Each structure stands twice: as C-alpha cells, then as structure tokens.
Image (cartoon, rainbow, N blue to C red; front, side, top):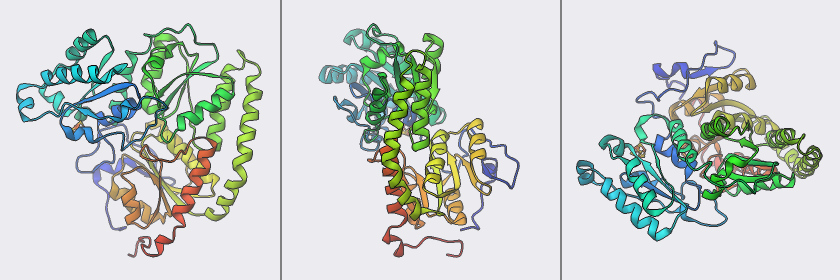
Amino acid sequence: MSSISILKGREQQIYQKGSQDFDMSCEKKSLAGSISQRACVFCGSRVVLYPIADALHLIHGPIGCASYTWDIRGALSSGPQLHRMSFSTDLQEKDIIFGGEKKLASALDTLIDTYKPKAAFVYATCIVGLIGDDIDAICKKASQEKGIPVLPVHSEGFKGTKKDGYKAACDAMANLVGTGSVKDVGPLSINIMGEFNIAGEAWIIRDYYERMGIEVVSVFTGDGRVENIKRSHGAALNVVQCSGSVIHLAQHMLERYGTPFIRVSYFGIEDMSKALYDVAEHFKDTCPEIMQRTQALVREEVKKVYPILKQYKQKLKGKKAAIYVGGAFKAFSMIKQLRTLGMDVVLAGSQTGTKEDYQVLRDMCDDGTVIVDDANPVELSKYSIEKGVSLFVGGVKERPMAFKLGIGFCDHNHERKLSLAGYGGMINFAREVYASVTSPVWQFAPRKTIEN
Ligand code: SF4
C-alpha cells in the first residue's frame, strides 16, 4: 500500500505538517482521473434546498439525477413531507433533441395542482445546460399562473464544484427572503443557518436557543418552511453553521437587510458552548439576563455528559483517527471532539476548504498530520494505512473504503440517522466511535498494514 504513488497534479493539495512549507492549493476543479469524493453542482444545491419540507422539488433532467433523494439524506420534518418526494422530468433522447421546455411546463402544472406546495424549486442538471432550455422563463410563467414562487436553481452539474451548487441554492432562496411580513418578529431573534435537521438536530439546537429566550425565525433549511424563509430578514442575527453552504445567503442578507452574521459549530462540547455564548454575547445589551441564562444552560448540559465522556476517553485514549469531510469548518470541531475522547488525529481533510480554512487546520493539527484537499480514495487509503488509524470519520463514500481496510468508521455526514450535534450528540458520537473501533468484527477483518 505504501508504494502507492500520488498523482503529480495532486501533490500541491497534500501536506504533511512539520515536513514541508505550507501552501495548500485548493478551491479548484478536481484533477481529471483523480476520482474526487466531491459531488456535482446539482448535488450541492439539492443538499441545501431539499429539507424545505413544504416546497416542491422538481429535477429537470434525466431520471438518474433524481436518484439523489430523501432516502440518501434524511432531513426530518415536523409537518409536511413533500420534500421526501423526488420529482423528475425524466428527459429522454427525444427531449434532448427537441428541447424539454414543454415537458417541464407540463410537469409543473400537474405537480403544483396535485400537491399544492408553498413554493417550487426547479433544478437544472447537466443536460439542461447543454440543450439550453430556458427554465427561467418557464418558472416565471408557472409562478404567474399558479400564484406561488417558482424558483429556477441554476445547478447544471458540470459547471463547477459542489460549492457552486451551494451558491445556486442561496441565489434561489434570496428570491424568497424579504417577501414576508416581519411585524411579529421580536428583537431577540435569530435565523439558524446551515443546519439541515439530520436526525432532528435542528430541533435540539432550537431548544437550546429557546431556553436562552431567543426566538428562532427560520432554520435554513432543516425542517424548513417557505413562510419562515420569507420573513427571515426580520431576524436580528444570522447564526451560520456549515458556512460553506449558506455563506452567500448570509452575505446577501448582510448587504441587503443589514443582518449581521456569526459563524458557529454545534459539534462537540467546546464548540457547542461557544456557539451559545457567542449568540448571548451578541444580545447582551438588548437582554442583560441572557448571559446568566446561557451559563446555567451550559452548566446543566455539560454536567450531564462529562462523566460519560470520561469513561469513553479511558477506553479510546491514544488511538489514531482520520477525518475527511465536506467543509473544513466541521473538521475543526471534529479534531476537538476526538481530542476530548483522548484520540489523536493523524489525517485531516475536506472537499471544499479554503486557504484560510487550511491555515487554521494546520495550526490545529499536530506535527506529522497529513492534511488533504479534495482527496481521492487511494490517497485516503494510503495515509490511513501508513498512519495506522483505528477510526475514519467521513461520509457514505468513505464507509466501504474504511471497512475494506479493517478500520472503524463513524458516519458524520447527512446520510446518518444519529444526531451528533449538541451535548447529547457528543455522547452519541463517543458511543458510535467506541462501538466501531472496539467491535469484535475486526478479528475477522484485520486492519491492513504497510506489510499486508
Ligand atoms: S447534474 Fe450532471 S453530474 Fe450531477 S447527477 Fe445529473 S448528470 Fe450527474
């Protein structure tokens, strides 16, 4: 395994702390032939928008694109379940030759009449970009006829990276923001941004804020509702997690409505507590008691989880871990989480990190840690083996790789069914890591080493 070489064109995106000058080359298209773990532009926009549960999500393209459904990323809804349906115009060869506009108009007509959504999102896929269907015009006409917002999402898969899809989703949502009444929105109010309610995480976070006395106007986009998005410009603060996915919308709201934003993470005790304190700090002049309330909340929650984490730490101490995630901001939290469990992170990377993100990652990591941008499975396998990791934390695409290498795995992406955010989420994380790393199954599938 260690004899596996790295593609020449990838060398500037791999860095070993302490052994070379750091100048990560990132934020660029994947190298051809490298089999990037990244998804396409359409996938990026779908990740951000599909948890809006009372909207219609119509994929204009071949049926294959529509395989990306709720089943793959299970954002929960407390009410409508329309987001779980994956509608597609199912473009065929004839449509590619003669155009798919009629098919799209007809699909919108039928679906809006049948499901009565509060809004509709129409996603452009690769082929639509190639044949040039005018989805803006079709959406505009449908919106006028049906009396609901029908929003084109320019997410043609080939036109960039998953990150461009995030921007396409933010551009679509920006058309909704500012169109609702804000007369009922109070001064102590926030929008939770970049939280997708995987396994009910948005509900956990919302509960913390409400205990602090804060009104949550809208969640972007977990358990999302069109009406709340429309009035979200009335909130006093945008609290942005997973900032890569929604930062464009936060920036738009800052420029257009003057809504300030802060970046947070809800993973791990340290970052979860910091998020609550940062929000309390923002509102302390408006509400002098908020800091006290927040301290009481944090104290109560930490008291519950700390003794349990201590037990796991004794069992996991000194074991090595690898992290590969979508956004680098999440990697920062995970390094802290794994350190809380006594583990050493020896490989860390992301699909979409920026130069600044990698600088922070470098500062956080120990000497010898391998840091990668837009890695491929061969690189992840090579360094996992060379570094002797016992645990890989990643998403669905890394799971089979880890298991084939005889390495414990924790799913920290949107496919999981376990809440990992908040204080309770930290316990779930510790439990999952412990169960996977110490599973008796590894005696039958031993870890690959440099020798074998
Ligand atoms: S939009 Fe293009 S790259 Fe994305 S799933 Fe569809 S065909 Fe594939």
